[in-house]
Amino acid sequence: MLHQLKNDFTQIFGSNDGIRAFFAPGRVNLIGEHTDYNGGHVFPCALSLGTYAIARKRNDSIVKMYSKNFETIGMVEFPLDELVYDSKHDWANYPKGVMKTFFEHGYFIDSGIEVLFYGNIPNGAGLSSSASIELATAVMLNELFGLQIDMLEMVKMSQEAENKFIGVNCGIMDQFAIGMGKKARAVLLDTQSLNFTYSPVKLENTSLVIANTNKRRGLADSKYNERREECERALSQLKEKLSIQSLGDLSIDQFEQNKHFITNETDRKRAKHAVYENQRTIEAVKKLQQGDIEGFGKLMNESHISLRDDYEVTGPELDALVEAAWQQEGVIGSRMTGAGFGGCTISIVRNDRMQAFIENVGKKYTEKTGLTADFYVVEIGDGAREIEFE
Ligand code: GLA
Image (cartoon, rainbow, N blue to C red; front, side):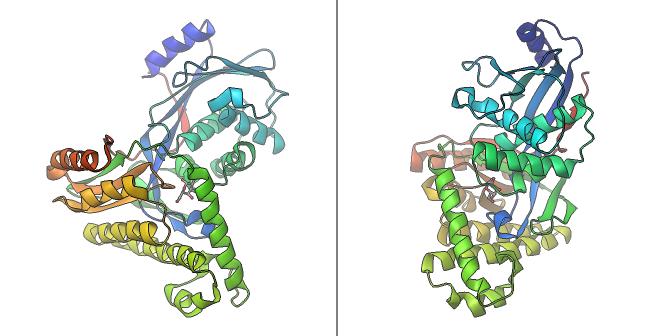
């Protein structure tokens, strides 16, 4: 892979003198969905798939970027003093937004750069290809310019770039998982305090498998923002009666005793999901640590049901994949993952049933939706970093 990218770089930029290589993974969330902007817990892990950036400094102040994933867009070029959103620059707005955020935080980038990007995360599948290119950029800038920024700060700046420059109001989960991920581990993050612990994902004779609905996630961003607003309204009504900072502060009992203060029925359902999902996530991690994979899987299923019925972010494609999975022998648990409205599911499946799972779920999904699903058996990888050419 790196050898090929080195050749590509030479072809595109004329030589490969002084190039360095960087990688940032994609992420998959095992449980704790739509809790990160509600002060709750999430339990994601970094993937072995991700975004590569091959880069070097220039002697002037021009930035040149090329993506092998968007060859029709061609070379994107802009001067360092013109870090403004430009729809013609398409994908390159993500790295540009990170550069701008670095400047705003006082990190000085004193020359132009040239970068070749390549990603093998399926695009728009909800595995965070955008946060992945953001962190690949952050790590690249940090190393090329010797900025010595710690990873958590880069995670926060990448989220800020996405919120302010791109205009997507995401929580911190994706950037955090991609920056801080560790091989063979998932990370339990309290999104309110940012306290976190790593937990080994020991699945015995089972594996994690991602299934992509291949449904375009149209309207996803506006629906996402709508869910945030519904939760914020619910929280502000609860705050009139209770001294809490976020929905994540509530136990299930406290929620049940106080839910009548939320006057709008839809807002109440959204808040219910946020509270129950947070508690479910804490519970699920305990089960995993005790080696109770079956217990973990049951909570994954409950998570999906709550996202389907109370949070209403699944839709026919995700439901079709998950329901087909639940009917298969050897499936320990299955749920949608990420923002929803299309994108991917994550399942735990017994290794000896994996082939049958992929065949049967794929077939049932096509029968029901007319779409074809893609399957990826997950390898949990390390977070964003510089990598060496072999
Ligand atoms: C998207 C957002 C995350 C998180 C998930 C839902 O991936 O980027 O911050 O809110 O949706 O859990």
